[in-house]
Image (cartoon, rainbow over all chains, first blue to last red; front, side, top):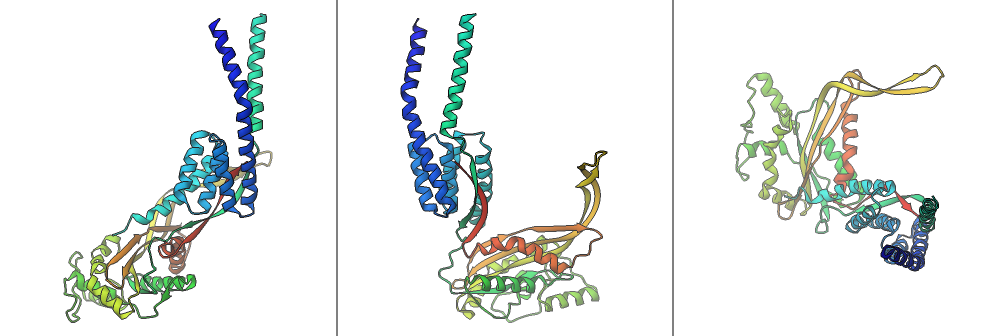
Length: 120
Length: 286
């Protein structure tokens, strides 16, 4: 009997939480899609704004973090790009697209990081 | 039985709900986009207006004068990129200077005949001495076959008094110098290559085959040293190693191999002095 109550409680919580979560994700998705559109036109600052907003709306949205990382790369903010990639990979560890982006980023970042290596 | 059926229906609806939610939340595809990442220069060159490519320590090469070719190439690249005003002056007799340093000759002392390097067995035959003198006259170091042969001369780059004087002569320019080793290289061993064949249906099949090959080519090992012409102090140095190998029967001129290898490392060299944009492609997820 208590198990049935618990199930009801869980189902109730899920049903009540879902619309607000779906709404948040819907808004974040709108921001992500708009960001992709403006990035394709070269408006990267606007894209960054949109994807930052998307990650605030839905901090579990891996695509938003991935896109944000790409935008940070484009603007030369490599530390921020790494943090965003880390977050995206933590959220979706099996996403091959994110992994592919991250591998390319690491290659570039290592090259940039060489600069401090041989200072006398 | 009914209970079991009810459970199955319940779990099926849960799966469908999850799939529905996923479709609503994402799965919108992706877009590949070109990006250009700016990489900050490794060196702050704002205190300098000019750059003087002073020359490079190089071994006596067979076909390529690595010192002069590197000077020409670096100067032309710096001019093209408009990074700093390139000083058009003769290169320094670095080989002679390096030999003096190895022989611990004081920097202010009048020029003396260069002492043979202590780490190298001196070639006492008349032919050997003549070859050494000829190499020195051409601005090259004799008896340099490997990188360690050049290492003993590297202390010339730490002689701050000497470089300060050079800087004063060239309006306190940023000085670019270093060493370049460009040597022939041969290697034999198993190489994997793809063999093309057609099956009975006429379909093309490519299979990897390991074959023993003798290959020859070149190794390029430059070290670029950046010196502050105002103080004579070394600001930064960077070493590279590039290698190219061809089939043993392929005749490739040494000079074209040299340029091919230099082409690979020039962007990184230029990134020391100016910001570079690295092109690439990334995927944006919708």
